[in-house]
Image 1 (cartoon, rainbow, N blue to C red):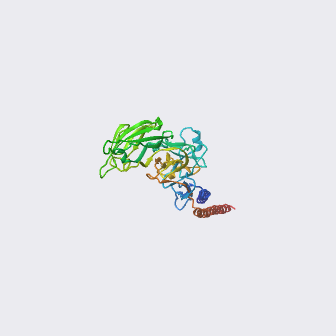
Image 2: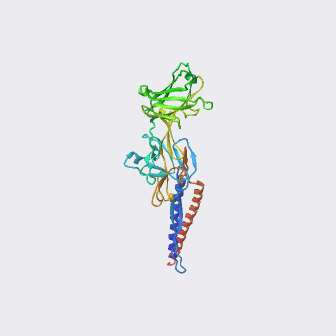
Image 3: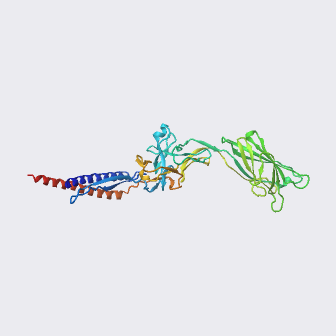
Length: 433
């Protein structure tokens, strides 16, 4: 029985070292595979109870494990949608075949890196056919409060590279100096005009016309103007009319003293703004707070627009897409505006090494890995997302070659045990002769 157990132990040793050689071979073969996680083989002894002076060899068993929680070093690339995770967490992806099949929500897989580029349908996809997943943003660029313990709200990140977009103008800040001499006795009461461009809801250029008419008194100075606002989108219809009174005191001379609304939205002295309705909706016009030197002033004898600033933009083409460290996907347009279109979360599980390993450096949560949770990149246990980067393989070729030498020696030694047992059995057979 002892000799037979020695034979079985030798065979078990051969199988165990063959398994270890298999993981070593896999690791070396994937030494240049981005995102590859090395596999490791552990040996476990088998003990068979001995009786008296007799000992039975139990042999050895092996277990293999993919070390998913190990992270490789990051290398820079030139593609803005090459993504890698720096720290904890993994990027959600899906099979392109499931996404394009449109048979319900695609299965979520996880990866730590990927080289994503737009395909013919606009999906951000790797050469191996994995599509990036994320939460879609609302038209204003905000991300709704999606549930974090399910993948149901995730959608394939799809870009319309031929997309046009524009931003309507909602606020205009103006700073204009009005000539104080026009409100004095004997002035000619010349009309002062200013036209400011704005963009409507369709990106079309329109104008708000500002007309300043001074009040010329019989004696002295009135320091008073009438402001009339007209909208070219409504055939120069009047959208607001206000009486402006300026201060002539020593410390605050030339600043707005009061604004009286004749028509249009009321003036807010705390913000210096009034709301008027252009053809596309409300428009905030900021003329400056009362007593402030910013905005409208009345000094000297010249009409001088000092500054005009506004939001909004004309229609433009998408020129680039980038993913920031927090996972927000930003689209850049040739008009200079940036729009948030998706957010890519990072997925974390309690036991990453318990996930199921699949092709293309992807993994699937399992009961052994624990329940997953979708975090904002940089929150909780997760790291951040690095664009223009890939994660290298975790294989250390030098260490694997060293292990290969050890495995070869161990395999040879187990083969020698089998050879020795064979010779001993042969000697036992020869006793009969």
